[in-house]
Amino acid sequence: MNPLEMIVLSVIGEAPAYGYAITKKIEARSENSIKAGPSVLYPLLKRLEKQGYVSPNWETVRSERTDDDSDGRRRKWYRLTPKGQRRLEQAIRSHRAHTAMLDEFINAGPGAAIEETSP
Amino acid sequence: MSHAPGGTGVPPVQDEPASSPAEQRPVDLAHPHEANDAVTSWLDGLVRVMRLPKRESDEIREELDSHVRDRVRDLMLVGESEPRAIHQAISELGDAALLAQRYKHARGISQRRWIMTAATFAIASSALVLSTMTLSGSPSPHTTSPASHNVAPFTAFAGAAVQSDGSRVAKVLKTTVEIDQGTTYREFFGSARKASRLIMDNAAFEQIDIDLDDAMGIDADGVTFAAVLEMVNRRIPFDTLALRATDGGVEITSQRVIDHVLNHLVVYDITDLMDNGVEPDQLTDLITTFVEPDQWLQNGGDLATYQIVAARLFIKAPIRFLPRIEWIMDQFDPESHKMDPEHHADAAVLGSR
Image (cartoon, each protein chain N blue to C red):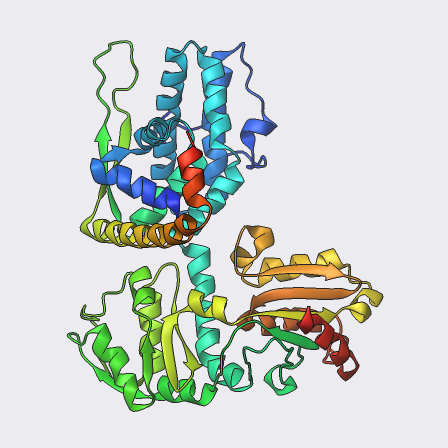
């Protein structure tokens, strides 16, 4: 599972979300260091949907503002499926094992010193 | 914003190029209607190049339309004018043709069809191909047997430690199986044990979301293991299961894993092809367009790559790509790049580097 896939599934796993909200959450949480632009995000969501990891649900947008033309517009919300949950858990376990293995090497070498001097 | 949501009320389709509408048709910032039209135009272009069923393309259109509206609203909240906000939102969607390609890839249409073709090819020919390969992990070069293809690369450097015996794979594929709706994947794959010792790559099964203890839901009586495997592979959107002979048995894993293991560096002498007027770029374009296009480094993939140096075409790719690459070269001159014993000395140099 690639990192963006893991990030997107994690975001959707917290709470159901629609595409634009997912983009904003990723940007906010990564302090803008990760950009999940629409040209990458939406095809990824389509794939996750096809794989059965997320399930979509269309909801009509309701705005409290009378001058807003949101009324009638729909948003596609995504929620993590049990299958997606299992896949995400598997990916997280694999990621942690991989990170732990790298740490073994890094911390045995110059990594420890770098950690001490880093801000 | 006034552009039509949900794929309704869109202007008639025009015969203009669909890629990069945002770039081809700059938004007139002085005229907001022009800007709104740009969104519709961009989405029209996307729908045209996607060529998906109407319901699906309507949904994609509606989702992207909604995204653009949200984005425009946010940009306007931080002070952008509506036309500028729309222009930026469209720009962020990028190239319509590229996005359409990503959607198609995500749906698994072209890739799935191609993988199925490749999988069928792999299953049908695996016995032949694997039985003709004798590879080892030593850093010395190896040649492929000319009997394995009509033509063969004149050198091949094996980068993987694999001893292959295609006859074992063939035995497994020909094994007759009897399964019913309740037979699990584990029981089905286990049935191949009567033909060979098996190595099951459980991680590969997890990667492609097959739970070995799930019932397959397939009735089959007296058909071959290969026929049922083909049915199983039809259910897997982004990969396929495949077999390869390994030390003492047969490994069942994903095609992708096998492609990484049986990934070879080969070199073809294309001097005669070039003498016949074939431009090297044309040749590599043909190869990367018609042989597993998604997998080439040059197309954004990670399984295969090529370089041309001094009339030598170096290709590093899964072994199963090679017959199709050679078929393409055969169309220009079947004899031109056949194995040339005189170049074996060069092969030794290649292998030792």
